[in-house]
Amino acid sequence: MNQPQAQQQMLSDLEVDMMTDLYNRLSTACHKKCIPPKYHEGDLNKGEAICLDRCVAKFLEVHDRIGKKLTSMYMQDEQMMKQMQQQQR
Amino acid sequence: MHHPRVRIKMEGLTPEQKSQLEISQFKQFLSTYNQVTESCFGDCIHDFTTRKITKDESECCSHCLDKYIKFTQRVSQRLQEHYQQTAATQ
Image (cartoon, rainbow over all chains, first blue to last red; front, side, top):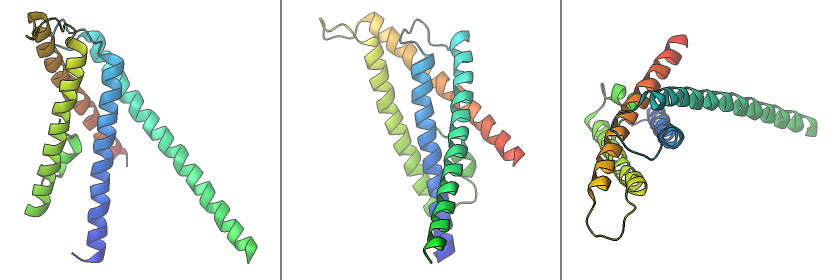
């Protein structure tokens, strides 16, 4: 495998790992929040189903928001570093 | 149990990549298996005066697993919808 291809592979592996991790965390969180530990029936009841839909949507929205915030913080940091480096010259 | 994005990516892979993917999916399955066992055991098994699993406990466990499977299906479906939406807006 040549260099760019290997890098591409690594990136897509990382993406799959990230998404699997996100899925696992989301599952654990929403199971905890929406499924009470009493199992009178094997079906999701209406309340649980609605809770679950909202939980997934909210989890993903929080994920998006934090992602945006982190990206902007990271960018600010980068710019600061660049400015400091320029000042030192 | 299964990951929505992983299923889509199956096509157009080399045999080596395919077997790697299958291994990681199997790993995910095993870890889910243990997780469900832990969670249903924790929620359903309370009586340690007998060695046998009681009828209530057994029913609870089977409902717990059924519910977990339906839970997983619903979460996967919603996630897939989310990814499709974000892919469409990009």
